[in-house]
Length: 333
Ligand code: KG4
Ligand code: ZN
Image (cartoon, rainbow, N blue to C red; front, side, top):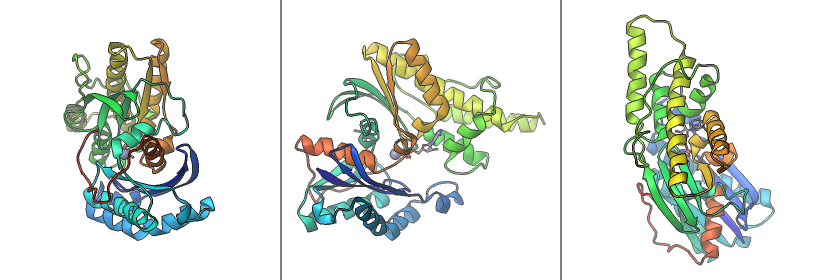
């Protein structure tokens, strides 16, 4: 079963050809980061137009690399739910058009669900049930994965997503976009204990997250340091901020695993690439006798392989989408 998968929910144009959910025949991502960097964030109209410019070229490259022909493809899948509407439309309409021409199924994919499935790409035997924390630029969501197509959302952010907080801090400090990898790198040379920043909602007896207050507290800290002419290292601020995010995410996720008596935690989404987050989870999971899995960095950030893997499981369970499926910009699972 060969699935040609598309992911264009934001500013990356990604095409992958995935066989039986796990065998990656082609995986290509064209990044628009340089284009959007000068605006300090993604400009939706520009992102959508750039998907159009490159998507056909990426299909040609993927197909050539795999040594197959489009007529050999068994199904076409694309992210259709959650993301920038204009961007989603390009990938989804491309997949639907190919599905129509070749009379093969089309599968519309939920972006958050695809991130969750990034953990299955290289691990067919991922334990079920497990708890998955998905952290990216658009979402922070905690899910009990009970089985394929059987999830329980137990927590999410009440304001900013974790990645959004990284991006906004970086933008404020004029360090560049996306902020996560930049803060991550700076934090390696900083002292995470230097500044005491809030751990939002860490003590609350629920699985909700909030990052807006932490972002404001960090910006106020910088303003005060400047106002008082105090010497400070940007690395210490990056490390202290990152530690506050990591502590909150790790503590609440471990608490959830204990409450639901689940022995496996998985991590997904762009922020799952964060080095301190991966290390702290590893440490705490060992301490608490919990299995811990996370995808390779290239499968944490937006990619089309995760779309192809999820589409395979959907198709296997008899699920396809109609050709009049429309995009939905804002939805959970
Ligand atoms: O999953 P993703 O590629 O796109 C969305 O679905 O949003 O995630 C992008 C987010 C951005 O906010 C970016 O700053 C963050 O992931 N990110 C990181 C790291 N790499 C990417 N955040 C923290 N540390 C990183 N190393
Ligand atoms: Zn994403």
